[in-house]
Amino acid sequence: MLKDITIGQYFPGQSILHEMDPRMKIVLTTVYIIMLFAASNPLGLCVSIPFLVLAYGVSRIPAVMILRSLKPVLPIIIFTSLLNMFFIDGQVLWQLGFLKITLQGLTTAIVMSIRILFLIAGTSLLTYTTSPIALTDGIERLFSPLKRLKLPVHELAMMMTIALRFIPTLVEETDKIMSAQKARGADMESGGLTRRAKALIPILIPLFVSAFRRADELALAMECRCYRGGEGRTRMKQLKIHSRDIFCAIFVGVCFAAVIAINLWAPVVLTMR
Amino acid sequence: MIAIKAQELTYTYSVGTPFEKTAVDHINLEIEQGEFVGVIGHTGSGKSTLIQHFNGLLKPTSGKIYINGTDLWAEDTVRRAYRVKVGLVCQYPEFRLFEETVYKDIAFGPGNMGLSPAEIDQRVRQAAAAVGLKPKTLDSSPFELSGGQKRRVAIAGVLAMEPDILILDEPTAGLDPKGREQILSLIKAYHKQRRNTILLVSHSMEDIAKYAKKVLVLSKAGVVMYDDVANVFSRAKEIEKIGLSVPQITRVFELLRDQGYPVSDSIYTLEYAKQELLRMLEERGVPHA
Image (cartoon, rainbow over all chains, first blue to last red; front, side, top):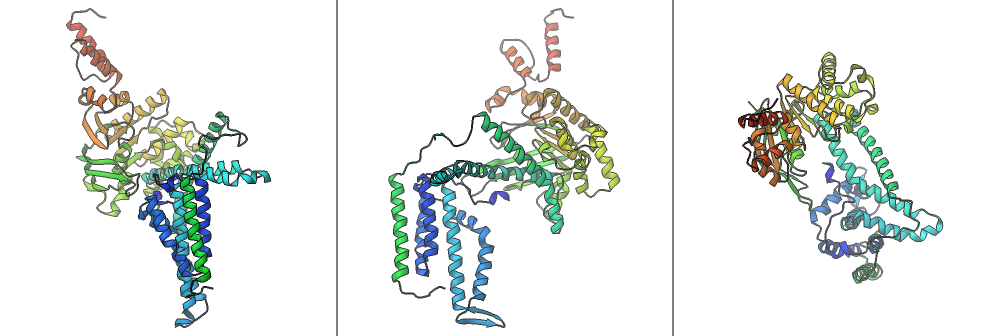
């Protein structure tokens, strides 16, 4: 049950996307997000469709995984779409009492949902193809100029690495604790809200205790291996920009240019607010 | 009566992802009521996955599981009742303690069964006594106790449900020799007193040889052997082939046989070994005290 959580789950493989420099992937993902929100025109958004299909095709991530990553955001999408549909003024298509659906509302709702769906699908691709370690490594390097501003970049990256590293461990631990308490007759599936909240206590307390114990042990293990922060640390795996990174950057650049071009010159069929 | 019956039982983890793994593969098994079964198999052979099916924690990907003749997954209402009839002590159970006092923690299981307060009180005290906890320990916090004592509290928490079938997944892992000995003797005494079915998962062949009556050998997600202790350990070569060992004393006797001494091939405890050696010496006319 808990194992279905996929956000931030790495999906090992050997595609060009897996082998790309994590820094480049983070930058390009950011560009992709900007691209989604820069497209002021449904046609511009359509550029993202072949882009995503191609990216997922190349990475060989099964399509089921996209659906899995989209599942948790569906309620948000439905909620915002409903708000958009009913509360944006414009040409009225359908009316019932004070409720009315307008053409503008409907298009905004559709465009917004597509945007959010693509946003999640696209950014999930980053975490699917990049191991958490590579990801934080990339983040650390990207933010390293901020060290001049006395920002503890290395420490922050290390904290992120550790946090990401321990998500699966804690999920597994939670699963084990749940099994153990279920084996003692704990009922977590029925009853009202307060009963269910109370049923969480036998899970949360052991989970917290074990999280603190693990943190303690990890700190000790790090100290035993002479960890003392980022100063003067060298890396086993140096990040390098290869031709494949340049190639992907050009590809994303072309897509971005296409979106801008469509914004400027394409006939504005359905202008959004 | 058959306590546990598995029919073509199969379980696959993470279906549809690259991490897909079949941990239990078409297992057929029948365990009699009142048996003391040792379960052995190296890491990843499917032991833990298999035993989690016996109390309905895991739903088989395919196949059936019957407890006392009832199909666990036929009706949803059945399962919770059987979860307390089949008591499972998971690995490192002391990390699952959560209550303020030892007493309350042991009472968690019986409380979930909806018993009367008087009945719960009686069961808690009985279970605590069965694992050798002093009555004054009941009022202390479980987090103040030592590792071995915590483990006893956790085992008592399952015993207090008075399960028909008791499953222990490596109950002695990480304990010192004295702690191991104590916990296993307590379990053995409990078995003698109640005559319930017990499954003991362990990596120690000596412990299995000493306490269990039958042995279930698992390898590569399947059952390799299920037989009396003597019969299983007499097939030492096969057991070593799948990466497990036999008790040290069995090895010694195997080597003696290879050297041409006429000793039995089903020696697996020190007691038997002594008798067998004395018998052999007597046959050869060697005087001994």
